[in-house]
Amino acid sequence: MDKETARKRILELREKTQYYANKYYDDDAPEISDFEYDMLMVELRNLENQYPDLIDKDSLTQKVGGHVKEGFEKVEHEVPLQSLQDVFSIEDLRLFDTRVRKELEQEEMIYTVEAKIDGLSVALEYKNGEFIKGATRGNGQIGEDVTENLKTVKNIPKKLKENVNIIVRGEVFISKADFEKMNEEQEILEEKTFANARNAAAGSLRQLDSKKTAKRPLDIYIFNVQRLENNPFNSHYEQLKYLETLGFNVNPVKKQCFGIDEAIKEIKRIGNIRESLTFGTDGAVIKVDNLESREKLGTNFKTPRWAIAYKYPPERKETILKDIICQVGRTGAITPMAILEPVKLAGSTISKTTLHNEDFIIEKDLKIGDHIIIQKAGDVIPEVVEVVKEKRTGDEKEFKMPDVCPVCGAPAIRENGEAIKRCIGIECPARKLRNIVHFASKAGMDIDGLRICNY
Image 1 (cartoon, rainbow, N blue to C red):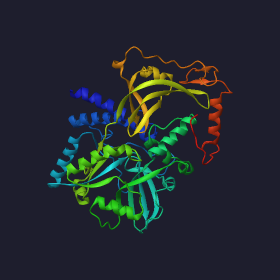
Image 2 (cartoon, rainbow, N blue to C red):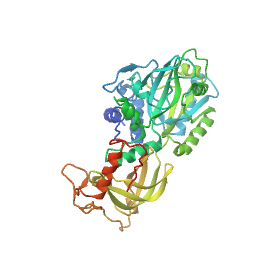
Image 3 (spheres, helix red, strand yellow):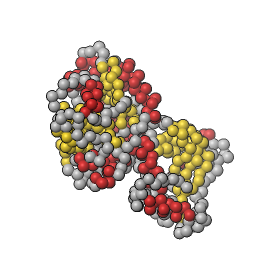
Image 4 (cartoon, rainbow, N blue to C red):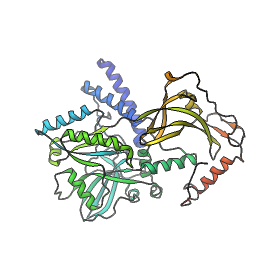
């Protein structure tokens, strides 16, 4: 690619990545998958490396995404909360190891490998063992003061077991099981489902009313010491063990590895078990364990030079679209649901998934009997990616949204400007049931102990 073509593509990629980053970090409403965004960033970084004179300080390769939300006090981080450079191949891990050993003039390195938690990064500050302040990462230099909201997170200790002055960094997240329950309830209430657990956690923590945050099932794992007064440690791994003795909920998937081969083996192991973990993870982080070595390696403006994140590719599986049925919600909304040939994907058996609306079915050109590719968005929500059209036999059947309610038989109408059809029968049994469920839900009377089930 010549320089002028590269310049135009770089400008296009900067605009795209900034837009998608704003939707992800600021609005908590991502429009593309993490993998698609990562690939755009890889292309941008490669072009900038090829033409370094085209690098701009405002490019997301040079800064951390995210801004301070209006309504929150700003907090300047005593120690910047940087992001990590992502890599997608074992070869890149070995190149990282080669660079580190060359710069430190060492034959072999000790690394700590940890599962990369899919959540929202925060800094917690303690004075004499008392929790006094918590802030989001924001742009890495300035974050949002979310102290009161963080006080509602069950595994953040208000008082440590020692009277230390310390700042730690952790990841606030929602477990896979809790996330699925949240989205099930959102569907039943006919409210927008969360795209992934990370954005659900971020949106929950960044509520201006801490009472709303308290109702969300937030959790946290601590993964770094930002600052420790009179720090006696020179090992990151030993610091993590010390944090556990203080009462912190530390990332449970971590291992000290001697050499890059052992580190790669551990990264592969985490990849093999990640579907069985209770929290979402899309990668593993490899860090130089020795703190003095970290100081020598230093950091770039955006990323540390002593750590890197390996991202796992999203798992996709082929299955058969056996049927499409329609469910009726509280407001009469008729939602098409795909009935699938059961397939094991990302640690669970998938036998059905939502098809959203009629337009989605038309866009994907879905037919009953099609071989289709599915994946889990954010490793949680199953979604239809595409049709394997070369496997069509001619026996596939077109699907048409019903003109009458599949439950009560009343007319089903799609109003101008709407994406969905609705049952207009006010006596519809399905609508009545959903209204009862809504009445008892958190958004209604908030009746504890009532199980919400699909009819």
